[in-house]
Image (cartoon, rainbow, N blue to C red; front, side):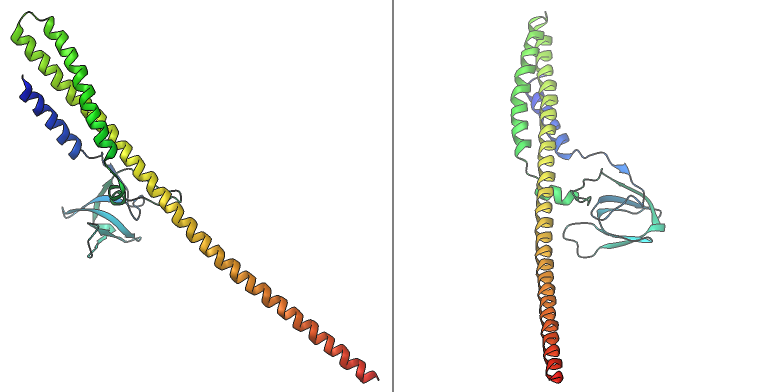
Length: 230
């Protein structure tokens, strides 16, 4: 096993990382919620994946892509199974869709962790492989063991570091979305509160004006009664 095998191991490792997907879990119809990314299998054998846009008692509406202008209506009685990832929620208990996470997620930590992981894993595994090579009587066998250890160690280490980087990027994206939603909700709340306070002030002004009118009418009435007595 030589350097070409090492490169092959690394390529396979990166392909596995890039194409790896999270484990799907079974979801009941009652558990399905708007904004969740799911895969639906029907009793007729058809399957479709997308985000739930709307859910009613008897059917749900699914959008298969972010740019899809023709959502699919699927009757509840036609659904054989629903699978998806564990749902991610914001501060108000609403689902953050995977599309939104992927759109917000940056690959900064994935790249940093991967590059760092390759260097550290290669150095450590090559050192171990060299020790094995030195303690092997057969030079050819020792060389093969050295490069095999280096390849496996580098691939495994790179995968672990890259996965940690991806998790970190995903976590930061989720936190960013939560913060954006919080600010948007706060802005909406402040706007509604300002409107409510404005209406409340108008009501209070109207109430004060009516009180002044009542006071003025009372004063005029008392004045008129005094004139009658004279």
